[in-house]
Amino acid sequence: MEENNRATILVTNDDGIDAPGLRALVHSLVATNLFKIQVCAPDSEKSAVSHSITWLHPIAAKQVHIDGTTAFAVSGTPADCTSLGISKALFPTVPDLVVSGINKGSNCGYHIVYSGTVAGAREAFFNGIPAISVSYDWVKGKSNVHDFTLAAQACIPIISAVLVEIKNQSFPQRCFLNIDVPNNAANHKGYKLTKQGNSIVRMGWKQVTSETEERKMSSDMTNIDTETPKDTCTSSVSSEQLLFAREVRGYVLDHEDTDHKSLQEGYITVTPLAALSPAEVDCQAYFREWLQSVTELPSSSAL
Image (cartoon, rainbow, N blue to C red; front, side):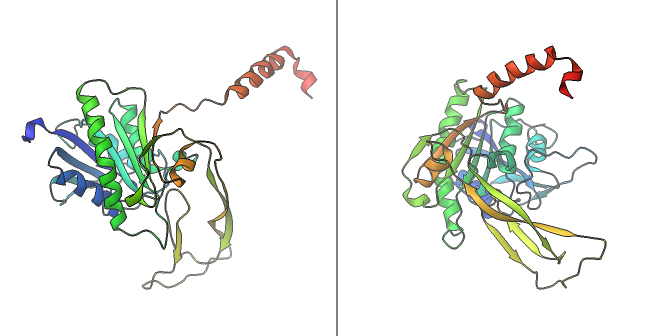
């Protein structure tokens, strides 16, 4: 396809520009020879930073080589990377589509709020640009790096179909898509439209004594590796300082037909998201009556 006729896709993520998920996605997109690929991704791990942005100081962008792309590693968050990538300050044109991922670990339920991967897509949505976030349900001891390629290939039809809708100016402007690929990507059950559920990993804290303990955690907070780097010495905490590390305490899972449940059943879940966070209807009704009673009560009666 001629260069001028190709749709432009900006790719970002939260695992960092060298992460195998991003590299597999980019390689699969380039291999189609259908798209112009730009990459603007964090220069280091930024999992679970949510939609944080850099405000008080400049961020650095360093061009890196990724075959078939124009790529930059950025010293910012996923939201920073998307914002910079679509701004025309770094690239000469605005992309047709932003794809954030592929994340190492699913992003379903309440974990969507924590996710830097989803934030990369949400930032594009804030700016009126169609976007997709993609995550793979990595399972430690079962998954391998090749699974990211399978996940990427499984998502190419959705990405291509979204670009057709964009070209036809029929893609909805009031949402972006969050896609989760099941662990057994090679034998998935197909695409399934889902809604965000309320699944979450319950986290607690434990006191630790080492500042050099290295913890790697996926943004879904289920894949945690703890190791002490070989080239560093373990340092003790001073008497004035306490250190605490997160630990998994349990899981709250969906029993309704939502994103997490469908993902565990083997489907590639496609969940339309937006940015508003309204409370449930029953909460609105409760507080409507409650607020009226508050305004009617004299202040002294509350004591």
